[in-house]
Image 1 (cartoon, rainbow, N blue to C red):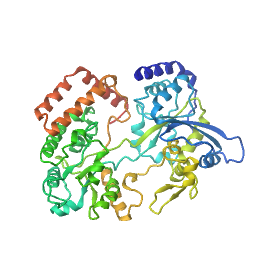
Image 2: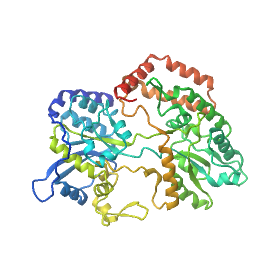
Image 3: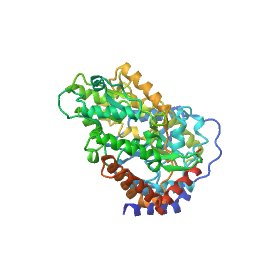
Image 4: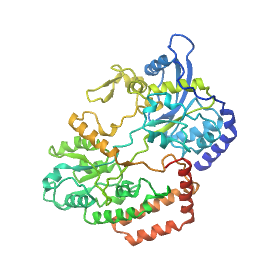
Length: 510
């Protein structure tokens, strides 16, 4: 039923996008002059966005200050996260859209892609260069957010790197006389020793190596860290192949099966949830995980309550057989903002001025947390804390912060409130190292193929189940080879691969 609603909304939008589109002239080289808040009627700017908590009521001083700065009247329409896809489709189908529209994922709201094709939203590619703060976003973020090589949205920016690091119990390494692993063989030895050599010294065989979740499916890094590519592997001929079909993926399955058999992976893998990874580390049951760089410090705070001598430290991912460390680069944003073509070019420029300001730390904080030292404070470590007065007024990053794109903080996943300066500097250097080696997913920014929309959930379940079964020894490597061949021979899956390759080439990727 939900699928039928989405299709219906997309079909209706086709008939209505003509009323949403308006002709726009060629962009000038400079932004329009901003209002001074003292003369001229403020320009209304309406924004529809997501909210993860209760939407604020009444006028917020932070929005008022931004409005005065740019002589605009900001009107924010919040939609609860649990039903935003359906609501957005209804709004688009009725042509009742605001000047700026948030879209969480084009693949779940394909009606917006259809509307873009019909000219309902401004192409922003020619304009971004004129806005110094927005143009500071990494090019990879814009590439990932683009459609067929053109940018139709402002990405809500997030870090590209720092979400994958090897977090280890340094005190366990020291106890066992071992060093942080630099290769996959060394990683196997460390994880096995954590399981077999009593690293916590309690005389019991009650510890494990890697805390890893198997539900809803093994993390992609299990394959990508062996050089199989992030999501898809790019070939020398410019084609892309699902990374789980590659020789490197088979190598990964053999490695993880061997590691599981040695006790180097927690035996509850098939039923482990992602949130349980932290629990296993904090409870001292596991000595390793692959997670955010900053998690080592965060988890340590609880771990040390029971064991003051415990010490979790983030390290580089070990090198694969090709002598390189492979990291999955994140997409670099969560959600995107589109500007309706109903607005004039003058208004578009004013909207971009506002978003250029909220792409600074000052503007972001003002729009998200309110007035500094009244509604929020900033600690010596740079951490923002909402005051009780600010909370009472309705400020919350889960709601008020959802209408802005934010500023790019490369080290967001390296820091945490209260983190000592030496750990922060260490983490920043680690993120820099990761950034020099991370690999973007060629699939980012591409629409899901028609076959995948129909069968993707079933395909993903089969792939994930096979990965789990091979790792725990329920299926053999020969079974893995047979499974890969079956999928290669599946006309539907091959059609999916072809369509994704066509989209990849159309996007202009090299």
